[in-house]
Length: 241
Image 1 (cartoon, rainbow, N blue to C red):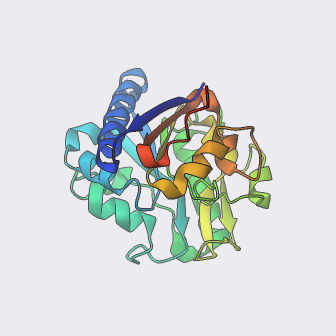
Image 2 (tube, one colour):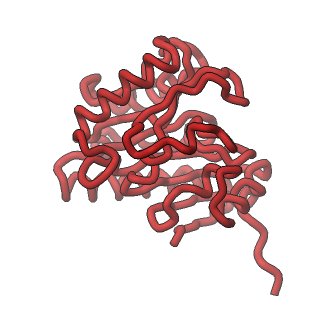
């Protein structure tokens, strides 16, 4: 069952999210000696990244991955990697060898192929199942219910379990070319932490908690592995009594 926490404001969301990430990474290190964390871009997780970046010890023995990336150079202002680097990775002094960025500058097809190879090598050929799984993925949600770069009704949502990373040529949200982890990889993760703030996300959150449908990609995540942290503005309305 989905674990849902509602907070009074965006700052509290970030604090609760950072605490959850620290707890899950510590658990993974204790159980397997290493933690695998995947990051998303966008404004919602930015403050969470700042909080994590201020505590380098929280990211020790943690391998950093990305849920998706725009096909831009790594120093571009739209790069998810740049956001994470500036707010979290550099402040926490995470070694470059533990940072696995999607090479958006290679384009959707080659960038996805390279990332899939790196993912399989580091997490094992059995990915995305068994021990070959991310420990935690931080996700946002779009007003249309998209997660990572998996958009409503996209053919990418039909990817099979052998497809780890996909190139996107026609994103409805600019820029059109992107790279994204596949839905099977997200579903195989030991945990997903989804953050949402602001009234513009309320309808998407409500739809996510409804029946699973490809029209709302977030609804296809595994509910028993999903933790949702919201502010009051993004929370679904309470049911009428």
